[in-house]
Image 1 (cartoon, rainbow, N blue to C red):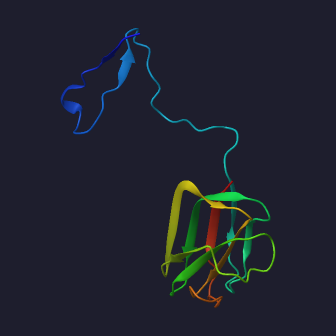
Image 2: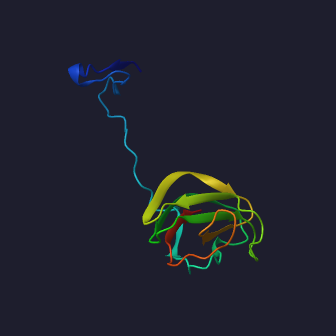
Image 3: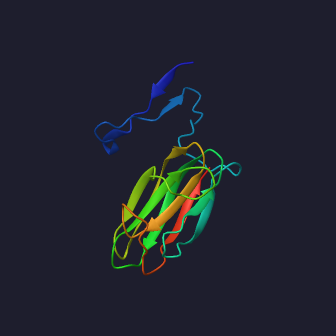
Length: 143
């Protein structure tokens, strides 16, 4: 089957590619659609201001695909992510996300792998579990 490019004329921009249709003019789908099955899970809540860890996915491998955090405090908050099975979080975090004072952070991506479990702690310091004055709101999207 031969494909003929369509001339889009002056509306194309540099580095753009024309949509190509088969000679019988059947359209090729070019949009993404949401699936009604599968999908991500989420955990939403508020930290208790004292750095206590929260279990997102306990004792099972998973991936973090996105998050939303809002920090109402006048100092930075640090979201400490751990790749551990259920238990007392005493080890070094796998990665740390700083949240600016009276600000937020959100993102969606391809996923960050956790092999043992997904836990977070929200603290006033990158290096310790120092308490915050106010709770930090959070939503973590995971699989």
